[in-house]
Length: 158
Ligand code: FES
Ligand code: FES
Image 1: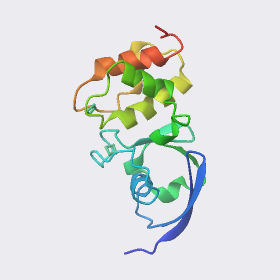
Image 2: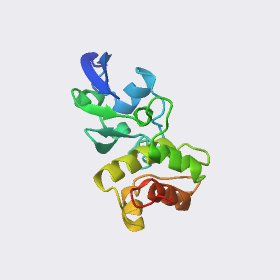
Image 3: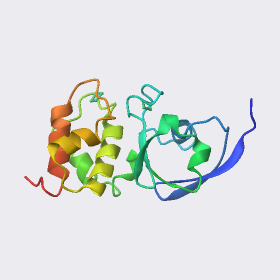
């Protein structure tokens, strides 16, 4: 087995000095070494989006990203979306619209929707669907998720 290497990960504004194996994924390190368990391990092969986090504002699959490759980058997980005890607009809208069923996909959905609205504050429904197309919900609650993202957008106040 390869030697652990020292890395520095900046997650939700906080820097962590860690030793990781070169093969360890960002998802593993977030969950197992930093105790940020919001990002979920679904398929662990890049298909479901439950492990989605942002690196420098872009959505990536935590399960396909090596932790060592995220050194020095700005990582945002679902835990970093809220302001203290206040949910982010996307998180609040997901709750308010009843989009959360079992909840397993929600961290990834919230991260992807946040990145989408940061880039496109007033997306069409098609753009929302497109922006969330990499996030699978096994409970199939997509209609309410789309409604929630629409309501969290600048054009969706209702
Ligand atoms: S756990 Fe990473 S895409 Fe499914
Ligand atoms: S709410 Fe259950 S997987 Fe999406």
